[in-house]
Length: 520
Image 1 (cartoon, rainbow, N blue to C red):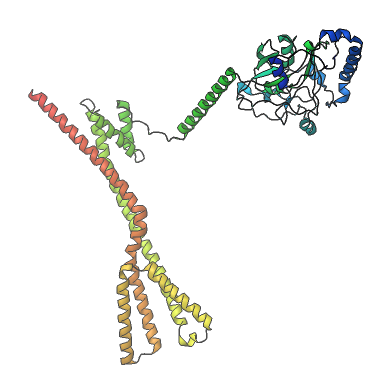
Image 2 (image 1 turned 90 degrees about the vertical axis):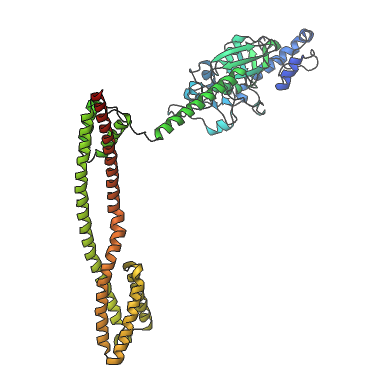
């Protein structure tokens, strides 16, 4: 009956040490040591109990349901694990180790950046777990070469863990059997991920450090498992694993380094974005050479590149590039600049002709508009005759009066000069007074009065057309085209004047130097 578990005997036992009490506080052990005397005195009864316990462990598959996908078993997954395959994470933060779930190795953080999970498209070859399995995970028996892991009671609560430190890659494993070795520990936890460091203590606990942070989640899933070394059920070969997060300085230091690296990369990206959005600086002015001088002289003769070329010449003169050797070159460039004045004058005369044509065109159009307004006004006057006015209803009369008033307001506001409104009002008053005197003296009929008023309105429209001609030209034409063109020409004149003055000063200085040398 060797290799079978024996039930715990609470009647007698040695006093536990401080380490044993600490391990019992973390996770109560399933088995306790028994005195050798008890073992020798009751051999038959123990053999019977161990046989019953072994039968229960052997039939554990019947007690705990195992849900496997087609063609995939838990023992196969753990006996021959695929490289880089870990248990999928569960809702409580524990991965399902040994279940029928295979996770893409890309889920492990790339380049050891644990705080930035990779975003990869779903692989159609992966096995999608059942949602019921994820919500209610079923732990299975794990068979290793040197030991066997038995799952805890499925109705037991989840083992408690401490808060996970940032960048944690180290775990604490307590409740180890006394005969546990580093090779067996590596055999158990190598399936969770690649191990970098393993420190085994004499007090039945160890610390395991992994390469990837995701391996810690897979190792935490083993917390609560009962471990049995080989097939021997002695207390020295059995124990209950308690896996928890450990706080290591190396993990914290590497996590801080990764955070600083991410911050540096973020600052670098922001700096590159700022440099990309920054407007480009103007190109510097080239230094004077004979080749550049010939190119600038050709640019001065063209209207498109005249302003830029003159600015280059001014910069050369300010730098003092003009000397006796190249004074003739500068003189030719100044001469070409002076000849540009004639082109500017011809352009100015052309613009004046265009302005005159625009004035004439606007004058004709304004006269047409005023004539149309006068016709509209005559229409309303004719509609107000008593012979016609009596036929309209009250609502129609109201609308006609409103339209007439609106047309007069538009004519006065939009087409008349504000400064001449007072004169026009005085003219209207004087006309009304003359009309009343003539009516009293000569008894002129109403038809003749309206005829004279129409003629007066037409003459007034012509007068208003001449008055408003200057106003509209000044508002529309000069503001849009003429002022802009004149400002550009003034700037060019100023640039030419500055260039001529600079050349004159340099020529005078050159003449003075020649005169001094001749006298000397």
